[in-house]
Length: 254
Image (tube, rainbow, N blue to C red; front, side):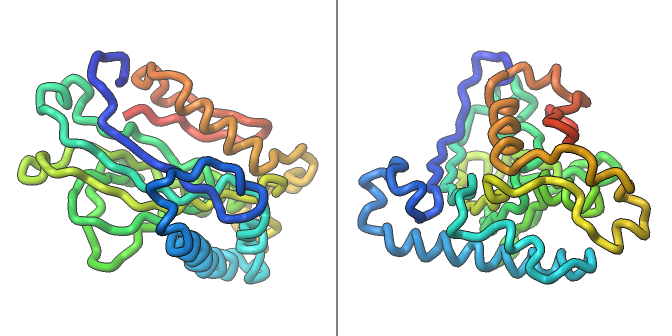
């Protein structure tokens, strides 16, 4: 991890949407007895996300279904439900990697739902550059804005930079579990600034914005995932820009 001999302490299982396009995706036999429950949860997760999309559409003075229509459950996309576990690691190992369990990054899709849990570790980066813990909220769901919403809103909705670090010492011995739903744009959906009256009044959308060849949802997500996972020289990436077509975002490092 991070160019050291420290092993990654994270395990995860991703489960694609339950639609015909992904019926041949691997599905671990352990989950078979719970397939119906998992599918219901997957579908319900996107329904919840769609309510957030509606609020964002209203804020940007767009049709209420502007964003939700670009994230239809039955349409092919890189959406997935994720079960994730972080194993406790010796302090000596954590110190070698600056206590990093998951390096700083923005999420590659539109919106991430994270079901709140009690073991600390998740931090977000403030506008001032400080790192703040995300406190647990009983029965709550943390919502992260991702890259594609940032692009659609011309930066009005900021893609949240976040990381996971070693928990405080009274929790450092605990197994940390995460449950997520990653909402990503439809594979064929164009990623370009929305025709928002608000964004135009604020001067965030250029008049020539429509002239640029748009990047599609699948293209952006796949290339962003590859960029994130295909190297471990993380310390050298801070401040560098990741770019696909006319879309650009900073690649954080720690």
